[in-house]
Length: 345
Image (cartoon, rainbow, N blue to C red; front, side, top):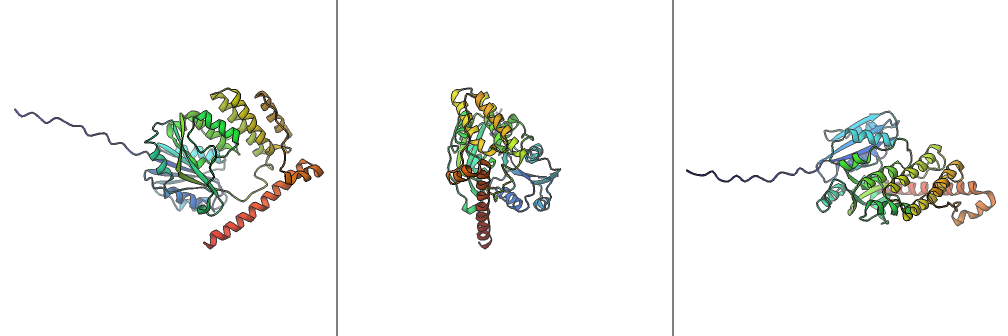
């Protein structure tokens, strides 16, 4: 009798993760094509792209629809804000990992691939991956990559404390987030019209086990021409800024209640104060009360020295208006010059 050969089971085939690139868009007809193209151009092949037009009044939707395909979904909704558009995009996606991308930003072609490769060294659904990022106006090849204290591996509390202490911004495009971590963090807060990304990312980080920084992966953050209406002229945005700060402070304190955490939160509020002072003294008082609860005290913000004489002669409001006007003029000149160089290249 001949015995049957011993059966050797083949090793299980591990499917590469599907990455969903989610793009909210509102009146972004100038930039949306480049953003979608940078998503399509990712060297990581297992990807899907979901674009949610948030009731644009320009040609954003028409431009986006040119890219529609089995792997590129384009949907539209009534205008409800960026947070609602992001929530819609996530509800439609199927990915194992989520890549957020604003409609005016870009990804380096190998950004996602480099981060997915890093998962082999740092496995786990609660591992959060970040990347380096640079800012540009029109020419992404001229992006300035300036390392900050947040460009590092860190435990969640350590990262959030550093962010508070140094008052640093991190583009939401840097993150690659597992579906489990995304679902654990919860949806984007639709109450927020400003700094909704800061508040959302703080919840993602708080839900994570560890942040791993992938220096070789790169995202590009577009700096638009400065506008006086951005901060300091919108009641809604000023209120959103303070609410976001309050929620982020609460989130951090839920992870660690310590003197260093409270001190970092007070410093964060102090840096925020210049955005709301003296336009909304009711919000200033709220910030002062929150700082007092943390055991600290806020000081009246100081204008840069070059505006001190205006403050002395004409008051704080006039000095702030002068600073805003100067920044707007400077930003518009730089944007115009960069656009000319972009068109001539």
